[in-house]
Amino acid sequence: MKFVNYPATYARFYDLIYQQLRDSVDKEFFLKELKQVKGKVLEIGVGTKRFFVEALNKGVDIYGIDISKSMINVLLAKLRPEHHKRISLQNMVNFHFADRFELIVAPLRVMMHLLDKKDQLAALNNACRHLKPGGTFIFDTFIPDLRQLISGLDDHTDFDAEYEPGKKIKRMVSTNPDLLNQLINITFRLEWDEDDGLKREEWKFPMRFFFRYELEHLIERSAFKSYKILGDYHGNELDANSKEFIIICKK
Image 1: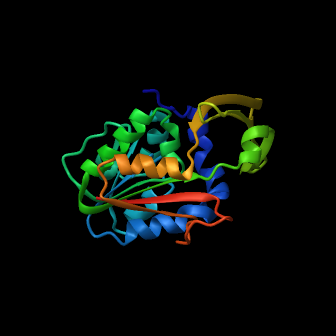
Image 2: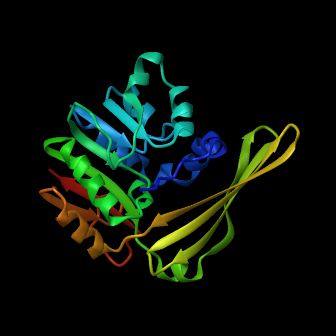
C-alpha cells in the first residue's frame, strides 16, 4: 500500500493552479452536493481548501482527511483554531471515525492514486462502513483518452501565471503510460520566480486509470447496495462525448 505525498512546494501553489484548471469544471457540482446535506459530511483528499472552507462557511458540518501533511498545513492556516479538529491526517483505505456520515466525497481523482485492486476495494468498503444507512459516496475518475495514453505528453505547459506581482509560476506535465498495468506515470515540473532567482522542482508519481466496466465490477464487489455512473458534472448520462466518470454509490 503506497500513497502519494504532495511536496511542500506543490501544496504552496495548489490553490492558485487548481482554481484556474478545475474550479470551473467540478466545484459547483461538489459544493451543491455538500451544501444540501443536513448531517455530517466527509471530504477525502481535502487538500488545501478547494471545497472545504466554502462549505464550512455555508454551515456544512464537514470533516476532511488527507495523506499529505504539507497540504493539511496549508489548510489549517486558513481555519480558525476551533475548526482544526475537523481535519486529520488519514488515508482513504483505513481512515477511522466514530461518527457516521450522510455523504462522503473523494473529488479530483483521489481513487486514481490507489494502484492496487485490494486497496481500491478496501477504500470503497471503508467509505461504506462510515456512511449512515442510505448514505452516499461520490468519487470521480477521467475516461481514458486512448490516443493520449499511447502517445503520452512531453513537457506540456498547463499553467503559466503570476502568483505575486512580478513573480511567475509555470507548470509542465509529462506522462509515460504503462498500458499493461493501467498506470499513467506523471512528472510535474514547476518553475517559479523568487527574490533570489528562478527555482525549479520536479515531482513524479503514478496514477491508475479505469475503464467503465472495470469500475462497475469493482463497485459490485463492494458493500454498496447500488450505484450509478454519470458522464459529466451536470448530471448527464454517459455517452460517446463523455470525458468523466462520476460514480455515485449508495449504502
